[in-house]
Length: 298
Image 1 (cartoon, helix red, strand yellow):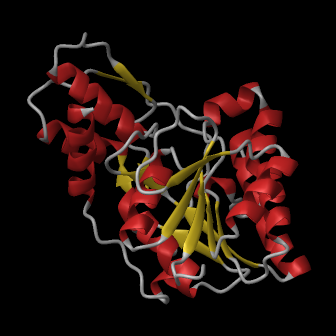
Image 2 (image 1 turned 135 degrees about the vertical axis):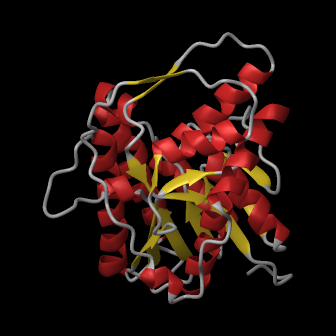
């Protein structure tokens, strides 16, 4: 903490969907938020913005030594499965090496508690290989965080959230559906949205619940541990569409391919996180309603 006793938290990826929610949340708790963004055009509320290219080790070291954070929430990275096929190397640079540079820069600060955020689709199930470069890069991020804890005794935890939903500029399927509906309500052309299958099931957790989970882990988590974040209640894409349709009078045009997806679907187990006192609180219906209201007003 600084001389005034205010906790400093460094948040990477601060202008993204989760980063925006995290900056506002931690600022509301009275923390001094250092919001790390890639360029000056990024807008962040609830903190002081710092422009830094996390793929440049020297820049990351300079940033960390300037801020000297008590806590670090590492959210930055690339997160598109489709784009990862086109340029796997850039995903390894953004998700693995940027994380390594950050952890290295933090080595002189052994009291700093660090939470590296990966992804549930970046973990292998039953010994099966990761089915895409994005997941591979996230898996390596998790291994790097655990290794730096083991090798250098840094206070590093890992969070593996499920699919995040709720208000904000999300590029996930729920965000795409919310934006589509908001456009239809204002007269946009009814171009159909293509979906692979309505039967596909995923665990969806509100981004605000996820951010509160990050706070819980930073406060109480065990260094070296991995914490899954979710509701443990898988929902089909058909259920998601049905809830959205109940929130609007606009007809949602869809093209359903009914093709099986190659992604591995993991059963969520949030026992370790619940043991720290956390639980998901925001119902799916509220998350989707808030997501739609966000796009109605942007």
